Length: 435
Ligand SMILES: NC(=O)c1ccc[n+]([C@@H]2O[C@H](COP(=O)([O-])OP(=O)(O)OC[C@H]3O[C@@H](n4cnc5c(N)ncnc54)[C@H](O)[C@@H]3O)[C@@H](O)[C@H]2O)c1
Image 1: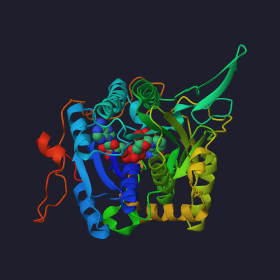
Image 2 (image 1 turned 90 degrees about the vertical axis):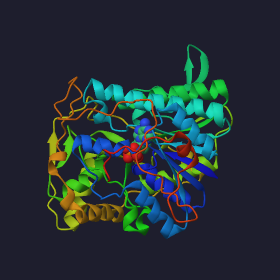
Image 3 (image 1 turned 180 degrees about the vertical axis):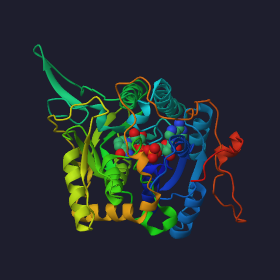
Image 4 (image 1 turned 30 degrees about the horizontal axis):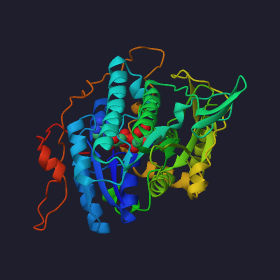
């Protein structure tokens, strides 16, 4: 199968790309590498030293014998995106290429506008590019469980069977998103559902839980393939962040009471879910929804598990309850359905002591790279502008961005340019971080 991964340089995207390439699918990454700029903007860095994408792809080719195409560019640029898809002709497009941090979207007006512009315009462009260039291609779109919020009833998988004033219907499950980022995902879902209904596109919306872990079988093959591990207050997801905090003896930062309960999954299950979605595509005109997580935990439960794992390694781990910077229920009912992926064949990796040990050992291995100042939550939902000393966000400029040369090698061993990139011939951007 030919699979284009939008956002393939990111945390989920890199692991997914390697996994699918390892299964002998033909892969292309479409990514502007803008995420590496956001790290610079925040003065943060991934715990693990990720290599520039061109190097990563070279390492993968040497360990696996598989080539992956790279189309560098911004999905908010329609000309670039449609040319890249036209050149690659995918059977499936996996769309990870969005700004995915709730705190980032809540920094101030500029970041909220940027998040929604980046995410909505990118997805809308993708819908039009599919409609125009490859209408039979299956869109696999990453959404989030955070779209639903925390209703006081069970959360269904996408749709709810409702009886109202004596009449019945099956309707999209109500959404109560908790940040401008989560709102962008809800707006995306509506746009995709509309495009499926109107144009007959086929799409799977994956409401993913919070992902933990950093290693998959493929990522673990070589140090040069190492994946992101974000631990900072803006991009660090909770379990990864707790492990980094434990590794340097920093109290685990639990927001409020810590009764916030969410769905979680291992990165190895993320990649398998994407594969299952691709292998079992939605039908023409179908907008299919899965809740993609395997277990639910409260934040305090996770803190307790990290404390226990740290103790086994001789680490003294304390918990600090900070005032919750978010506007959210700190204790609530939570029961979300998640049977669809298991029915397709997912065999979950549940959060075990062994996995926590391995996460802790990654954090300990790289602990010299940890900047404890990055742990303190500085983005408060109640403020319209937060005092983060940030450089300006890169604007959506509506033009292709060439950030690194594609790493494909021609017969003479020299790097070649992928067809869509050659056609677009964008100028190289000098100010991009190497890692
Ligand atoms: N990480 C999680 O725990 C989690 C949980 C639920 C849902 N998700 C969703 O999964 C997706 C991937 O998450 P992630 O953690 O891998 O994020 P990430 O930030 O690590 O990766 C996103 C990638 O997309 C690229 N990108 C962003 N905007 C782009 C644009 N306009 N054009 C081209 N490339 C662009 C970035 O450069 C980056 O490489 C996101 O859509 C996110 O909402 C993630």
